[in-house]
Image 1 (cartoon, helix red, strand yellow):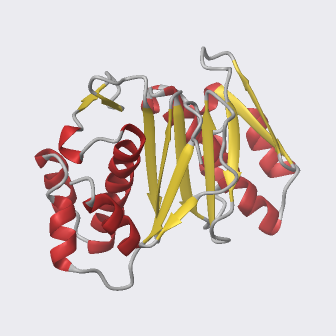
Image 2 (cartoon, rainbow, N blue to C red):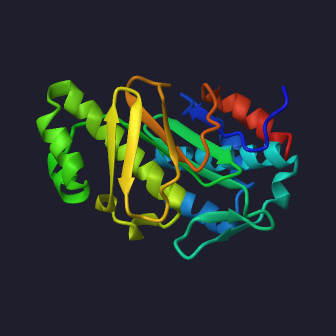
Image 3 (tube, rainbow, N blue to C red):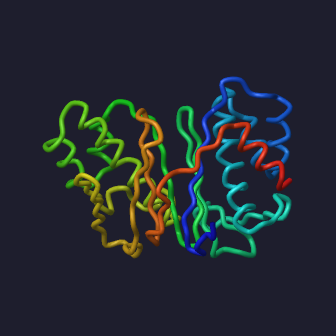
Length: 238
Protein backbone atom coordinates (compact mmCIF):
# COMPACT_ATOMS: atom_id res chain seq x y z
CA UNK A 1 0.00 0.00 0.00
CA UNK A 2 1.31 3.47 -0.91
CA UNK A 3 1.01 5.90 1.99
CA UNK A 4 -0.16 9.42 1.22
CA UNK A 5 2.42 12.03 2.20
CA UNK A 6 -0.04 13.81 4.49
CA UNK A 7 -1.53 10.66 5.99
CA UNK A 8 -1.86 10.46 9.76
CA UNK A 9 -0.66 7.29 11.46
CA UNK A 10 -1.47 6.29 15.01
CA UNK A 11 -0.02 3.38 16.95
CA UNK A 12 -1.03 1.83 20.24
CA UNK A 13 0.64 -0.68 22.54
CA UNK A 14 -0.60 -2.25 25.76
CA UNK A 15 1.51 -2.65 28.87
CA UNK A 16 2.86 -6.21 29.02
CA UNK A 17 1.72 -8.44 31.87
CA UNK A 18 5.34 -9.49 32.35
CA UNK A 19 8.24 -7.49 30.95
CA UNK A 20 11.77 -8.56 30.13
CA UNK A 21 14.39 -6.54 32.02
CA UNK A 22 16.99 -7.09 29.31
CA UNK A 23 14.63 -5.84 26.57
CA UNK A 24 13.54 -2.85 28.67
CA UNK A 25 17.19 -1.94 29.26
CA UNK A 26 17.88 -2.18 25.51
CA UNK A 27 14.94 0.11 24.72
CA UNK A 28 16.02 2.58 27.40
CA UNK A 29 19.40 2.80 25.71
CA UNK A 30 17.69 4.11 22.57
CA UNK A 31 16.58 7.28 24.38
CA UNK A 32 18.50 10.45 25.13
CA UNK A 33 20.31 10.39 28.53
CA UNK A 34 18.06 13.07 30.06
CA UNK A 35 14.94 11.10 29.08
CA UNK A 36 16.43 7.93 30.55
CA UNK A 37 17.07 9.76 33.80
CA UNK A 38 13.49 11.06 33.99
CA UNK A 39 12.12 7.56 33.43
CA UNK A 40 14.37 6.09 36.12
CA UNK A 41 12.96 8.57 38.64
CA UNK A 42 9.53 6.93 38.53
CA UNK A 43 8.75 5.03 41.72
CA UNK A 44 6.27 2.66 40.06
CA UNK A 45 7.61 0.45 37.29
CA UNK A 46 4.36 0.63 35.30
CA UNK A 47 4.68 4.44 35.14
CA UNK A 48 8.20 4.07 33.78
CA UNK A 49 7.09 1.44 31.25
CA UNK A 50 4.21 3.57 29.95
CA UNK A 51 6.50 6.54 29.41
CA UNK A 52 9.15 4.34 27.79
CA UNK A 53 6.61 2.71 25.44
CA UNK A 54 5.19 6.07 24.37
CA UNK A 55 8.66 7.39 23.49
CA UNK A 56 9.64 4.22 21.65
CA UNK A 57 6.37 4.31 19.69
CA UNK A 58 7.11 7.88 18.58
CA UNK A 59 10.63 6.90 17.55
CA UNK A 60 9.35 3.85 15.69
CA UNK A 61 6.82 6.02 13.84
CA UNK A 62 9.54 8.51 12.85
CA UNK A 63 11.96 5.78 11.72
CA UNK A 64 9.26 4.09 9.64
CA UNK A 65 8.08 7.35 8.11
CA UNK A 66 11.53 8.61 7.11
CA UNK A 67 13.28 5.24 6.74
CA UNK A 68 16.05 6.27 9.10
CA UNK A 69 17.79 4.70 12.07
CA UNK A 70 16.96 5.64 15.63
CA UNK A 71 20.48 7.07 16.12
CA UNK A 72 19.70 9.61 13.38
CA UNK A 73 16.84 11.08 15.42
CA UNK A 74 17.80 14.35 17.10
CA UNK A 75 15.17 16.34 18.93
CA UNK A 76 14.83 20.03 19.62
CA UNK A 77 12.14 21.66 21.72
CA UNK A 78 10.07 24.77 21.12
CA UNK A 79 9.73 27.45 23.80
CA UNK A 80 6.85 25.52 25.37
CA UNK A 81 8.71 22.21 25.56
CA UNK A 82 7.13 20.50 22.55
CA UNK A 83 9.63 18.10 20.89
CA UNK A 84 10.54 18.77 17.26
CA UNK A 85 12.59 16.66 14.89
CA UNK A 86 15.86 18.45 14.13
CA UNK A 87 16.26 18.94 10.39
CA UNK A 88 12.64 18.04 9.67
CA UNK A 89 10.39 20.26 11.75
CA UNK A 90 7.61 19.82 9.19
CA UNK A 91 7.08 16.31 10.56
CA UNK A 92 4.83 16.33 13.62
CA UNK A 93 4.43 13.66 16.26
CA UNK A 94 2.84 13.33 19.66
CA UNK A 95 2.20 10.63 22.23
CA UNK A 96 0.10 9.90 25.29
CA UNK A 97 -0.23 7.19 27.89
CA UNK A 98 -2.71 6.19 30.57
CA UNK A 99 -3.46 3.06 32.54
CA UNK A 100 -2.41 0.06 30.45
CA UNK A 101 -1.92 1.94 27.18
CA UNK A 102 0.57 4.08 25.29
CA UNK A 103 -0.26 5.69 21.93
CA UNK A 104 1.64 7.77 19.39
CA UNK A 105 0.51 9.73 16.32
CA UNK A 106 2.54 11.14 13.43
CA UNK A 107 1.61 13.48 10.58
CA UNK A 108 2.98 16.03 8.13
CA UNK A 109 0.81 18.66 9.85
CA UNK A 110 0.36 19.65 13.53
CA UNK A 111 -1.20 16.86 15.56
CA UNK A 112 -2.08 16.11 19.17
CA UNK A 113 -3.25 12.90 20.81
CA UNK A 114 -4.60 12.23 24.28
CA UNK A 115 -5.74 9.02 25.94
CA UNK A 116 -7.26 8.76 29.40
CA UNK A 117 -8.64 5.95 31.48
CA UNK A 118 -12.29 6.68 32.32
CA UNK A 119 -12.84 7.41 35.99
CA UNK A 120 -15.11 9.77 37.88
CA UNK A 121 -16.50 12.90 36.25
CA UNK A 122 -14.91 15.66 38.30
CA UNK A 123 -17.37 18.53 38.04
CA UNK A 124 -15.17 20.79 40.16
CA UNK A 125 -12.38 20.38 37.60
CA UNK A 126 -14.81 21.01 34.74
CA UNK A 127 -16.12 24.16 36.42
CA UNK A 128 -12.61 25.47 36.98
CA UNK A 129 -10.94 24.56 33.69
CA UNK A 130 -13.62 24.02 31.02
CA UNK A 131 -15.39 26.81 29.17
CA UNK A 132 -18.79 27.92 30.56
CA UNK A 133 -20.57 26.24 27.62
CA UNK A 134 -18.73 22.96 28.15
CA UNK A 135 -19.52 22.99 31.87
CA UNK A 136 -23.16 23.74 31.14
CA UNK A 137 -23.35 20.89 28.60
CA UNK A 138 -21.82 18.51 31.11
CA UNK A 139 -24.03 19.60 34.01
CA UNK A 140 -27.38 20.13 32.28
CA UNK A 141 -27.34 17.85 29.23
CA UNK A 142 -25.68 14.77 30.75
CA UNK A 143 -26.21 12.65 33.81
CA UNK A 144 -25.00 9.37 35.28
CA UNK A 145 -22.79 7.24 33.03
CA UNK A 146 -23.33 9.59 30.07
CA UNK A 147 -21.91 12.49 32.11
CA UNK A 148 -18.88 10.43 33.13
CA UNK A 149 -18.12 9.44 29.54
CA UNK A 150 -18.75 12.95 28.20
CA UNK A 151 -16.35 14.42 30.77
CA UNK A 152 -13.57 12.24 29.36
CA UNK A 153 -14.65 12.97 25.79
CA UNK A 154 -14.18 16.67 26.50
CA UNK A 155 -11.01 16.21 28.52
CA UNK A 156 -9.20 14.18 25.86
CA UNK A 157 -10.47 16.32 22.98
CA UNK A 158 -9.32 19.50 24.72
CA UNK A 159 -5.94 18.01 25.63
CA UNK A 160 -5.45 16.82 22.04
CA UNK A 161 -6.18 20.36 20.81
CA UNK A 162 -3.67 21.96 23.20
CA UNK A 163 -1.03 19.41 22.23
CA UNK A 164 -1.64 20.06 18.52
CA UNK A 165 -1.23 23.81 19.09
CA UNK A 166 2.08 23.06 20.84
CA UNK A 167 1.82 25.72 23.54
CA UNK A 168 1.28 23.46 26.51
CA UNK A 169 -0.74 24.76 29.43
CA UNK A 170 0.19 28.35 28.55
CA UNK A 171 -2.96 28.05 26.45
CA UNK A 172 -5.92 28.07 28.82
CA UNK A 173 -8.31 25.12 28.62
CA UNK A 174 -11.19 27.58 28.94
CA UNK A 175 -10.04 29.68 25.95
CA UNK A 176 -11.91 27.41 23.52
CA UNK A 177 -15.08 25.35 23.50
CA UNK A 178 -15.63 21.86 22.15
CA UNK A 179 -19.11 20.41 21.73
CA UNK A 180 -19.84 16.86 20.68
CA UNK A 181 -23.16 15.77 19.21
CA UNK A 182 -23.08 12.07 18.37
CA UNK A 183 -20.02 11.79 16.10
CA UNK A 184 -19.90 15.49 15.18
CA UNK A 185 -17.24 17.46 17.06
CA UNK A 186 -17.31 21.26 16.80
CA UNK A 187 -14.61 23.70 17.93
CA UNK A 188 -15.39 27.32 18.82
CA UNK A 189 -12.36 29.50 19.52
CA UNK A 190 -10.74 32.86 18.96
CA UNK A 191 -7.32 31.22 19.14
CA UNK A 192 -5.19 31.35 16.00
CA UNK A 193 -5.31 27.56 15.58
CA UNK A 194 -8.83 27.10 14.18
CA UNK A 195 -8.52 25.04 11.01
CA UNK A 196 -8.32 21.64 12.64
CA UNK A 197 -10.17 18.34 12.76
CA UNK A 198 -10.98 15.83 15.48
CA UNK A 199 -11.31 12.07 15.53
CA UNK A 200 -11.89 9.57 18.33
CA UNK A 201 -11.03 5.88 18.35
CA UNK A 202 -12.46 3.07 20.48
CA UNK A 203 -9.60 0.69 21.21
CA UNK A 204 -10.67 -0.05 24.79
CA UNK A 205 -14.10 0.57 26.35
CA UNK A 206 -12.46 1.72 29.60
CA UNK A 207 -10.61 4.57 27.87
CA UNK A 208 -11.13 7.63 25.69
CA UNK A 209 -8.72 8.31 22.82
CA UNK A 210 -8.90 11.60 20.91
CA UNK A 211 -6.89 13.17 18.09
CA UNK A 212 -6.71 16.74 16.85
CA UNK A 213 -4.95 17.46 13.56
CA UNK A 214 -4.48 20.23 11.03
CA UNK A 215 -5.62 17.89 8.26
CA UNK A 216 -8.36 15.28 8.14
CA UNK A 217 -6.45 12.35 6.65
CA UNK A 218 -7.24 10.15 9.63
CA UNK A 219 -6.77 6.40 9.35
CA UNK A 220 -9.77 4.14 9.82
CA UNK A 221 -8.20 2.45 12.82
CA UNK A 222 -5.29 2.52 15.24
CA UNK A 223 -2.40 0.17 14.45
CA UNK A 224 -2.23 -1.98 17.57
CA UNK A 225 1.00 -3.71 18.50
CA UNK A 226 1.91 -6.02 21.32
CA UNK A 227 4.93 -5.04 23.41
CA UNK A 228 6.88 -7.80 21.67
CA UNK A 229 5.81 -6.63 18.19
CA UNK A 230 6.73 -3.04 18.99
CA UNK A 231 10.12 -4.13 20.33
CA UNK A 232 10.89 -6.34 17.34
CA UNK A 233 9.88 -3.63 14.86
CA UNK A 234 11.88 -0.95 16.67
CA UNK A 235 15.06 -3.04 17.02
CA UNK A 236 15.23 -3.21 13.22
CA UNK A 237 15.91 0.55 13.27
CA UNK A 238 18.53 0.47 16.02
